[in-house]
Amino acid sequence: MGAKAITITSGKGGVGKTTTTANLAVALARMNQKVVVIDADIGLRNLDVIMGLENRIVYDLVDVIEGRCKLRQAMIKHKQFNYLYLLPAAQTRDKTAISPTDMMYLVKKLREEFDYILIDSPAGIERGFRNALAPADEVIIVTNPEVSAVRDADRIIGLIEAANKGPARLILNRVKMEMIKKGEMLSADDVTDILAIKLIGIVPEDEYVVPASNSGTPVILNENSRAGIAFNNIARRIMGEDVPFMQLESSGGLFQRIAQWFSGG
Amino acid sequence: MQDDLVAIKGTQDGLLISLSPTEQWLTVTSELAKRIDEKTAFFSGARVTIELGERPVPKHELTGLKALLERRNLTIALIMSDSRTTIEAAQALDIRAGSSSPITQIDDDLKDALPFTSEEEGIPGVLLRRTLRSGRTVHSDGHVVILGDVNPGAEIVAVGDIFIWGRLRGSVHAGAHGDENAVICALDMSPTQIRIAGLIATAPDDNKRRQIMPEMAFIRDQQIIVEAWNIK
Image (tube, rainbow over all chains, first blue to last red; front, side, top):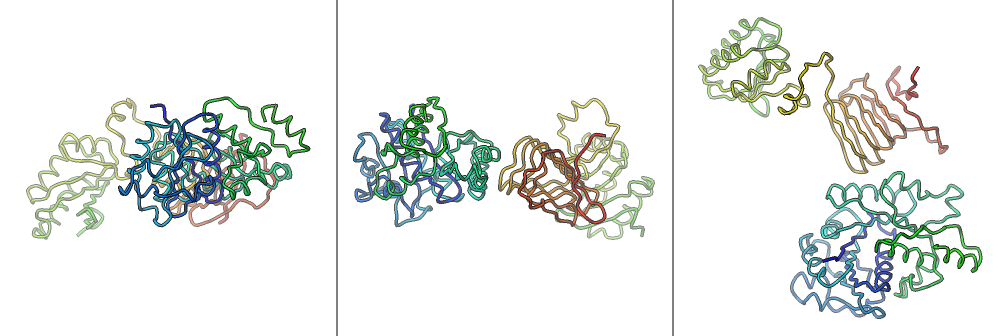
């Protein structure tokens, strides 16, 4: 089986794990990959909202594990893509409702049918994180260019190495080029200098992201979004393509933006 | 009763008998016999650890000691020694033997592979060939050498010195048992905090990018000083 299970994690909360997971899932599905996303954040589920599938949930991951439904019944098909599914978390339970072994069992079953299994990890280093890490073939760390997020990412990378799941790859999310130029924000070099893992993407801060998440249409579907372009590039890199990193210089006019886009941006 | 000849202590692991490494072997062993004979009921059936320090005890002397104890119904659980002769003698007699300072224990395989006896006695340590990330800790009774970076949130505590062949950005404590001669060296010294013996120092709070160079921290006049490490 060529299926790849990729866990997206961060240590710190609020850095954009779930947004990243949703966008990568849509990007991969748009490139005709068979994708399932698992929301491992039991008790604080969000992935369904960001993917616009909240009102379709009947069963969830814990229902599957506890035998109240078949795996198939809990998987929600995306509105737009035929081979994009969500396995939602339970909202009324907590992380102890499932175990790392349960997650490995679930992912094993899903491997037969899908190309990519993306697992959205909860924040923290406890049970929820261990559940999300257990079945992973690859790990992607999401962090922001700020000291506390990088500190937590470093901690998580250490735990991933200790679990022999490394080397993880890094997404630097919510980067503001103007601030880096003024020396007010860590640059990608500053971050990789400390974390010493390979960068798989740099995502600029983008005002389109929040409304897109609120409306359940991941920002990648908005062609004007620079964050969307960045996520799309990351998805292509996950598939093994060699995509150059985009120029993060702030957008001038629309033409400049298009020019950047065409230049591989 | 002469305490400096023979010291008997109760420990977590049973009785620890320390024999003076300098006094004559015969004097020491007969004192030991005398001490046991004074309290036969107390000692009978005990498993004891014998600490011999630096004294080289050849096999025939160790055999004698073993017999002396066995006659009094004591068994040797462990021999602790800093002498290779003693340790080898113990091994020949099938007695578990270890070094007094736990870190000096060398694997048997390794010992066989070392053809020379070292002319310089050093203090053993721990060498780690990797970057130490946030939340990871290294504690050692000797020195600590890291070939890699020490990131913020990582922690090293060493009784001896600390050498970082890389960037030091975490917190480290050298001379943790109070050795004020302990030093901390790093190729790039930007620690969260350094401690030597009982003193604490933090890196200066300037945001300017300093020039990166190897530096060494040590105590002078009851203060931690950090100096560039120059080859002069």
